[in-house]
Length: 487
Image (cartoon, rainbow, N blue to C red):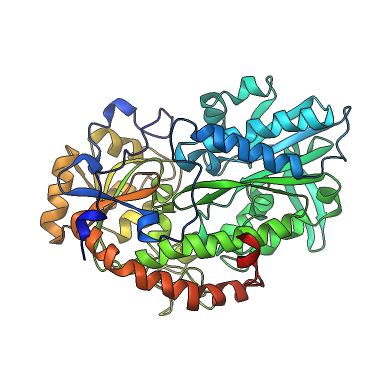
């Protein structure tokens, strides 16, 4: 095996961003990808059957994303929207962390322009939902100029905002009033899989109706009352309600693979779009997650402007890597190693209540927290994985975050990135490193881990295509023939 042909100079990581949820970008003194022994692997070289991308690319990459969005939007039925009507374009916070954020913002801009052009409607608003960081989308709206693009009609909405009762076949559930205060709604989302440990790629395209667009009383069902697999029906119940159906115009998705933006997809039938998104999530992202399950030992590095579980490597978030010791797509597996629901199955002494509770990925020997944000309860990560946080300022930030008051009880601080990495090398005895820094089109890893991944990729690709993918799709009621339709 000629490893050198597949190893490249490290891909530039996503830059630190100013946010009330993270340390000042000036305090991020070094990136781990810049350290000796680090290389990048291009995902399309590991898996040659991955489709071509629009972004990352050359200087016209964003223009190509815009054209793909416009082409898809021109084909969808908008005849229900009249010039005198109002329209809410519904967005979710996670989209703004994909591939630098610009592609999702460009989709939202294209929606506004094409809807006005095709329907004559001018009262078009943006409603951007969040998770637990209630001001997060306000930052994104300003960062990408969406406040001016939507002529002052762009706002962030939070799960504690005024609610609206929605009568469903399972009873009254609650949405956010500002989400539904227009004649029509347009569901603007993406095929990035993100929280497979939560939604298990079941109705992923429908999920925001029970999350970003819902009040806390309803969305908590997802995280705490029913857990993975069982809670997905709440989003479907809301979406299928007479109230929401009376307002739903269409969905517009940014088609993402783990290696970049591969196109755009619009449909008046959300379930048809959901089937296509399910195929993308299982076939493309499934190969990366299955490959990550082949890692025997490593140091995981957090180096991305997002909360701890949401930092990216090869299009996959750290929370999914902590569960890579199991098959997160297999519906026969009831509990992932990490979800809030899994956390509930641990005693106060840190021992699991059930023998069936899978441990956090034992391949992760240590976590070096070089740069990641607060705003998400992350104590479970540092409690179960030895963690080194770089810089006193970052340690203090987590120590004073109401969701992470115990995070630093289980972590130590290092003065510098170099010191943290040397400590990790000495303690773990491994030089295999995977960096969650959002490198687009590939992943930044150490040379030793790169060799292992190169060796394992061909067998993983064959196993996913021939064994795992048919099983995953069958479990979700998606016909494997969608493979031919998607080509």
